[in-house]
Length: 469
Image (cartoon, rainbow, N blue to C red; front, side, top):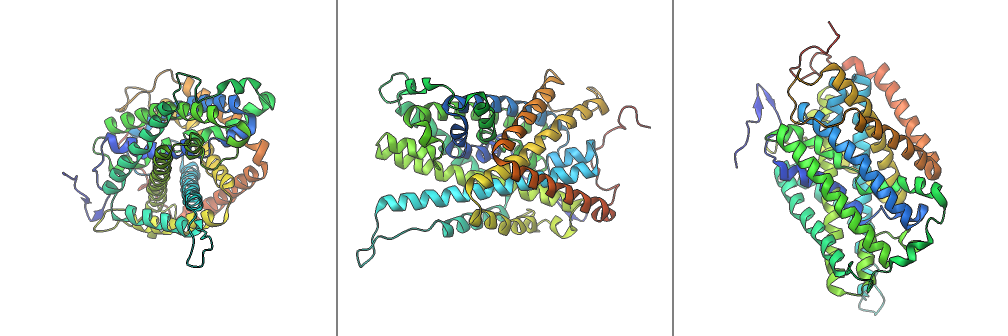
């Protein structure tokens, strides 16, 4: 395996070793767990039909995200993804906030994955009916599995990005294949197993239920934008980032629709709306041991792949902010042997463990969704400013998204609708997160920004923006 040099002057940098397959694995690996858990809470908000509408509307939102990200990130090929974009295009205060959005979105998603894995192991342990020497039933506790999962994946990330994302590539592919096998095992071409006629009850909570369902509809795709975090470790950013991201969103659209179709046809919407592991439950409803084993493995692999990618992305965002002195520079160190941002990886471990250990799953998911939603809102203004400051032809782009500015405007409208959807069920959490980011912004503006070396933070060799002299 050839590796791009890691030494630039006296600084140790990240290795450029990744290809399009790794980018696909990073994006889909983070998100595919959304098919295995979390999306079904949208059924509880508005019914099965509302969840399907939310699935496709959220798919449109994330298609806009993927197109915008593919253009800007293939041009701003630096670790930190949207943080690096904000730094170069909008300004320092926005960049600081975007960096926090990324860290919180991925760290909360990592915690949600650990919670799901612990629950699944506990459930399967209960089904096995294990007993001790005295004949009393043994109870598996989920907490040790939560901590061990986060610790193991942090260690894997610590050891190197190539092995980390190659591992993701394999287990993500297996988890995706498990969804396809379940879909065909349910015989969607006949009404023998799936009973979709029961969906004709329509919308139990009306159209307000459809809007409310959009909140958890985002969970089908949340994290696909994480492909940007690997921009500094890709061999050919202009090719690999757009190709990996766009094939990733197409993969997820297919998986999301198949997941809804099978689960909605097997389970009553009242049960589906509160299930923790809906795809595994679908295999249980089909009463097939091979399918149960397969979906157990698929659920485990999807949670591992997602948590693994989340550690990768959150640490890169934190590392990038520290390297620019937006955070203490101590976090900006690169391991001399493994060439990973090891201090950032280690620092975020207890944060994820704390939320996974004590917070309910729906609350953790909501915190992740809100952080991601704030980041998507930024992207609408970011891409418009990018096109105005550096029009087509002024700098080289690896990908040009079509129909500009329509995707940005559609994304802005969908983000606004989703804020309202979140407010309907989790208004307190929404207000608390907004207050947190306001306080963090004040801290950065009045205290931290004095340590930033303003000239060093801009790394792209671009001409002056149009209209600035």
